[in-house]
Image (cartoon, rainbow, N blue to C red):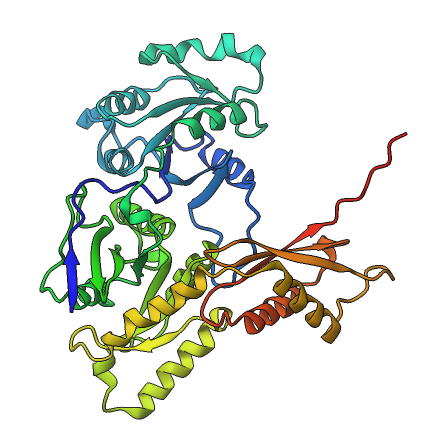
Amino acid sequence: MSEIKTYHGKPGRLEAPIVALIGRPNAGKSTLFNRITKSRKAIVDPTPGVTRDRQYERVDWEERSFILVDTGGIEKPGRPEKDGDVMAGSIQEQTLQAVAEADVLLFLLDGREGVTPADFEVTALLRKSDKPVYFVVNKIDGEELEPTLLPPFYELGIELLWPISAEHGYGVRTLLDDLAGRLPQRQESALQHDDVIRIAVFGRPNVGKSSLVNRLLGEERMVVSDIPGTTRDSIDTVLTVNSRNYLLIDTAGIRRKGKVREKLEKFSIIKALAALERCDVALILISAEEGITEQDSRVIGYTQEQGKGCILVVNKWDLVTAEPAAQKRIMAEVAMATQFVSFAPVLSLSALTGRGVKKLLPTVAAVHEQFCRTFPTNRLNRLLRAAVEAHSPSLHRGRRIKLLYTTQIASRPPTFAIVTNYPKEIHFSYHRYLVNSFRKGLGLDKTPVKIVFRERKRRTISF
């Protein structure tokens, strides 16, 4: 018998904070966005199915993480002198939504063009928010230009301005250092304990995410905690089944990029992706009626970019129950499109009728168990030696690549470091071979496995 619990009180923030970048066209937003996202210190493996042209990106800076969002340019509407509203139309929509959804705001001003009426309007709106706001004056290429270009912006009534050059990098590090210190802090929460399996439900709109959560809860409606926000927010509910606790996170639907027109919906997508920070296992819902789509593959790619456990759930199976040929075709298409996550279990069910739903939580528990597993170093080194003996790495400029030893450096997912003499010269195919060898040798057939290569530290002789 399952027991439904509503978590009262604001849970600890586990998702990455959202930092919104707003400003007029040609103020340098894209340049600043690119400079910040390219300065990430995290090493990210290339993952198939992950688009790189999106306007939001995870950033790691000084051991803090956030999602940087380019909200689009604040354009002056047509004939503002007639309607008298500089903040009309899309300007107001974009800015209001950025203020409402982001945790921190970066308002980029054009240091060369100077202050405009739109800047006064946006500043007045930002003063009404309770969010941290950075007033960033761009196109200031050095300290010697500050006395000339900064003073006009103090007319906005701002005490602290941040002079930068997005193109040349002047002042950007100082800005990010201060920003990292003001990001919302992670808080301890009962939901962070190891005995709680955190599950996020992802998928395109109308694929049955909320229906599946409701079916698991045994309720006709979502049971929500008192977390402030709209229906576009992620909704958390704690479910206890057979003395095991699950945190269910129902997220907003993720549409194909071309269909994301409203800024409100765009932020819903970002908040859904931010929920990845909070989960251990992601359920990717695929419609049996529509089959797997390119956007489904992208969402799966997002989960692997974050190194999360993953289960592919083909919902609405009741629509093809009487069609064995259609069932085989759908499963074949799913297998073909998701070869890059061949370890992810695939389940077929119907959230509407309940058929097949009972096998979902046991599968989640099995994935989570492997996701958190740790191994002794001596077992890992025996496995590494056996893999190298069976298939040695290719030579590098006539020299042998030596894989010296390995150790586990993290779990969630299991992550292993291999020390070698030429870490940058190991071919991706051999990398994949080692991952498969570790996966098979350690019984990790349902979880992501990561291997990183580290260069052997050479001894220095001092006299």
